[in-house]
Length: 251
Ligand SMILES: [Ca+2]
Image 1 (cartoon, rainbow, N blue to C red):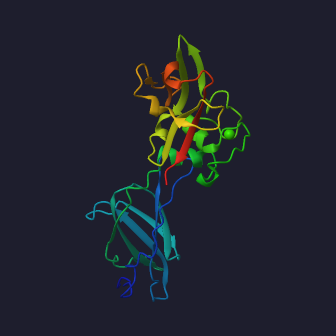
Image 2: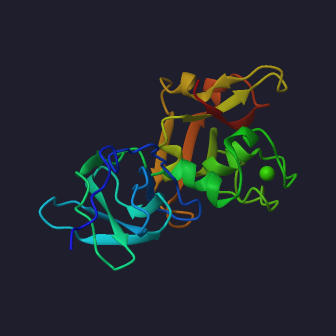
Image 3: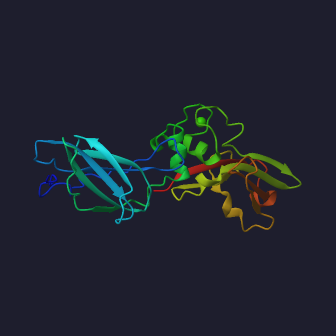
């Protein structure tokens, strides 16, 4: 018996590529959507898509039924895949495979820790300045400090603890290290010595003798570092000093 032949333009059309993130997972999963033209033969009952990273062997296949599209998920990032499709007729005969269609998956599909934080908390980045738990810590700062945006936990996260001892102003705060490393996020400690009407970046004082900054990795839990700053009081020029932590999204 003669195998079913795909029509001339069948199978070679990759009409859409969809990169999908798994929102609750630390690891992205890439989904590619393939589509092809239906075969003209009336006894075709279904299609079978095969894919592989090694064109010599077809490792995986998937019966799509009569559908002429399929979404293949669980693919790895930055990997060259080859796809083909065959038609199956009512007698169970399989057509010649369509020419291989090759596609390299994106290397950008792995979400950063910053992206994962937002999706894990069911939030969009557009809500960066919002404060749904009403604890005075906006979502962006919650992400930076390892806070819970849905629970008022500002006593633990998102605030600076400060005190003066022996002429030294000492501050500490917590950062979620993997989030803080994201290039879209910047943060800093800002100080005011005029009753909070103007603020300056504490790093402007870093050249002053006695200024110090240290990071204690994982001091507040896995991935949560404690940052300590030490500023000589004479660098501030005032004993009425306030500090606040700021997080900002880069333009
Ligand atoms: Ca909050």
